[in-house]
Image (cartoon, rainbow, N blue to C red; front, top):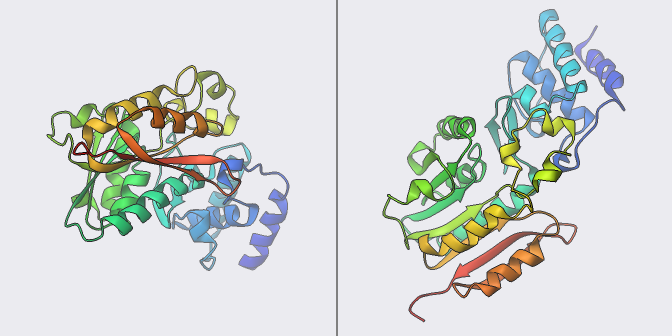
Length: 303
């Protein structure tokens, strides 16, 4: 049977049988099958990249492997854990099973930060950025890739994520700009002598309450680490540290930029405004008008 006919037959068989999470809006039946097809051929790519490529010829044993991948996806295994790739800001990250999968919605945070760095720091020889709760290095690597004058330090408490971040830094040949630490929040930076010297602190922290984490869909709960989502009883525990400690590390007029959950933006913007160390607080909304990113500037101590 011709390859295109095999593809169409398989596409017909999965139509209506796959469920797609709202926070993985880039996935659909066609690009899911395309990504799995490429994976079976030995070329691991995300669905976004797969959609732009010609389908390679599959040998009979590769078609068998493809059918096994499809069966796993139908059972609820995330696509990114099968392809071991996830696209973020135009980059295909390496991602192993059991790791948090970067979401497209976080591109609003990464894009906001990169735009700021390119606009306000383009003439600087070197800029220092801290990425807290870095995960697999998603935002840190995107910043290093698009802002060549940046040095980015990332921390995360989940060791497998940091191991993946180091792999991705090498994958994109950005090791000279990136350093990753398996430790909590600001802890690894206390001895580096960078207090009051950091230009930007960025973070996409866990922001879901413990109760809601336990109620998450099986595709997430069974395959991604709870550490990536669980932010304590009220979903705000890490924000408290982020807002209170960041001024110790930011230089005068440096920026704190972070992602927040639905319904948290207004409260966190008020928290920032009550802290006299911050000024120029900006609420950044998604396409639906929800506050998803907050940006605040450290008030100069010379004022």
